[in-house]
Amino acid sequence: MSGRIPREFIDELLVRVDIVDLIDSHVPLKKTGNNFVARCPFHIEKTPSFSVNRKKQFFHCFGCGASGNAIGFLMDFSHLDFVEAVEDLAGFAGLEVPRISIDHQASGSRKDLNSLYELMEQVAAFYADQLRTSDEGKIAVEYLKSRGVSGGCASDFMLGYAPDEWKALASRFDQKLLLEAGLLVSKEGGQFYDRFRGRLMFPIRDRRARIIGFGGRVLDDSLPKYLNSPETSLFHKGKEVYGLHELLEKNAKPQRILIVEGYMDVITLAQFGIHYAVAALGTAASQAHLDLLFRFSSELVFCFDGDKAGREAAWRAMESAFSSLKDGRQIRVMLLPQNHDPDSLVREEGVDGFVGRVQTAVGLSEYFFEHFSNELNLSEMEGRAQLVSKARPYLERLPESVFKEMMLARLKELSGWAGLDVLENATTLVSKQGLKQYPRADKKRTRDNGRLSSARVAIALLVQNPRLIEALDQRQIDWGALEFPGVVLFKSILQTITNKNPANTAILMECYRGAVEEKSIKALALLDLQVSDDKVDAVFCDALNRLLTQAREINLARLLDKDRVEGLDAQEKELLRKMLAVK
Image (cartoon, rainbow, N blue to C red; front, side, top):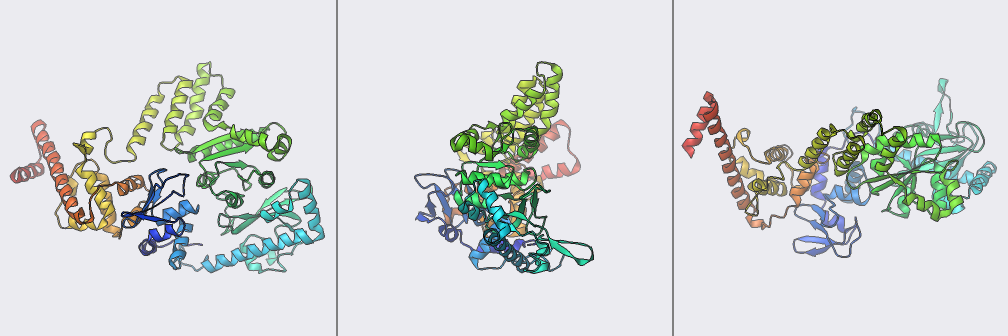
């Protein structure tokens, strides 16, 4: 559906829906004190560590660290993207999702898309019927039997057959919708014909089981061998993979996902009981593909043919792989023996042999450096220089993480180039400072005699109780003159609350989705300050007073130091005079 979802509607949703009711409808909750608990749905555990707070409208697992608001829960639990989660949450609340049209036109409405989804279902049913009943379909059935595909497996993947006719679909379905769905090809003069003719058909389903496109394979030697649906309002091949719905139907939490090259590879492996394979749709695996798959498993295994083309495809995948890696994610590379594809290899070595290869596939780091070691002479200075030149651009694409630091350290070890220390140290600095606005090393500034600092208490209480901004509105504070650890984050939160007026923590968190401050906001929302509801205002005001006093002392010391060393200008002298008068 085209158009943006209004932010006001998202905020209204998060106010209307009680996160306890939402999660309880998926995972039965038990009340314990002020919270509701359950065994975490995101990892295996024996005792409950999954907690839901009604006041904050926030969930958190103390075992695996999963946390978020109602939208975040649906994204994690049902494997949805943001828009899909908002749509599901709206359905739970009995609301229709409004849209702000980007081009102020009425195209792309929900009704239009629903009509397209219905058409795709009808066309898939037509193709499936043709496979079962038509004389031409029998040829396709024989082909599937020759590949060892059973009727049950063909049914699971909704396989069908497109008749070798120019207007088999055009004579049966709405032509306008067929054109929008990419199932008809238009010619000059207003003529059109079926895109898929005389092909074994593979419906492509999204995570919600909706058919969004098709792939078709010829049964003779004509070209192209495979043909996919074009880009449409439903289908974007750079964002979807084949077989993901079927995989999740078998196992919603697979240990790993195997990425293969073709439709038949996915189906053949499923026939042998290997239900965790998917295929990119006629294109190289993109970062969007990998980020999608990492929602469902922390380990991805690339499976490529062992020939030259397969090795080249494996290396092309590195760019997307490096851009998608974060701590906790793992990518492996499995190159098959020469003259084998997954179909032939699983038949020759059996399921156990094939699975053994998957489990022992080479880790991305090993494959990466082994590739260069085989290509370059690292015993020579020139080879080591080439290693740095070729490897460094890939490593710089890695998100800031422990993995990136280790990869840079390995490159330094292989190349012996001390100049990498600069990049490595910069990476370490960014990764350590990215999460929090206050230094971790200077613990005296963060804690006072074991207690949380005034800054942290004040910021955390404000995140957990956005209404406290009223106490700040009643004071005249010169924010430009304030200096204390965390002041940048504090100002950001104040500005957001002022502009958005969030009703609770869940809505405030939603304002920071995808922002650099998101992790910090979550951490502050989770911080247990052990303050009862009737003491929140008093504790906040006390922390704020101490914070302002601390900031004033820092500013005063700065002015006195400057006056002693280099002197003050007229404005600074007046400010110092006023501060000393107050003191």
